[in-house]
Image 1 (cartoon, rainbow, N blue to C red):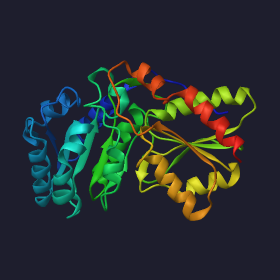
Image 2 (tube, one colour):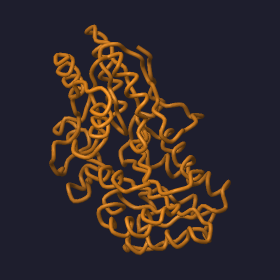
Image 3 (cartoon, one colour):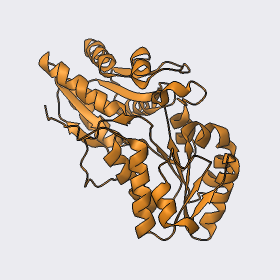
Length: 317
């Protein structure tokens, strides 16, 4: 199996911050809006270098979305920033009506997504945001796996014309993808070729999938690992090609199994070539307070859970 090295744990929100700093220097049309969470979104350098291109909206997320939609009319590329819960659930009506319906070039950038928000608890740990956003016509949904990929995604979405939801997290996680990578929206990344099972993972679960596959290899199980950083549009071709070879799939995501990556993959399979599938995701539940590691373990979102799902799905072939 191909070896991946953690170059040093970093939080994905800092990858977003570095991407914004670079965009501030290279794209004069990029502007940033924040709902009172500048430090959490790592926007300090962007603001310091581009004070005239930053708007502190305060705790008024719905107003932020409306302002962003308006800014696009003048040719600006607005990046709205706050926690994922407030980026989606709190302002869904404004996103639907002011951004998606008229296909505005707004980038909705959401930090502190999923269960790994940790101690802040269930009210902040949104686990249904991917489902909410992917159902909006024309909305691109991106969930990168580490610092480097989040920075690359931030740069890529600025060049894309249309609404985008970019999801990233709070904790420091393994940083293992190339620093100089090219991020292609809608194109999956093959991390390891295998023959027994396809593991399709997104976000923080990509590294957990790699760890699981290394253990399973020692047990004689060959895992093909695909990093799906873009959940919509999903790379159907990559999924179908892999599953045609392995005959089964495990999907892994830090999100409810209803409405997330797993359901998108299930739709692709059902429309083309139904195969056994297991879901590593939260099971229609809210989260709770705890450390990210404790919660990932309790809710079955780690390497051990992926190993278990792989063995189960192989038994169903």
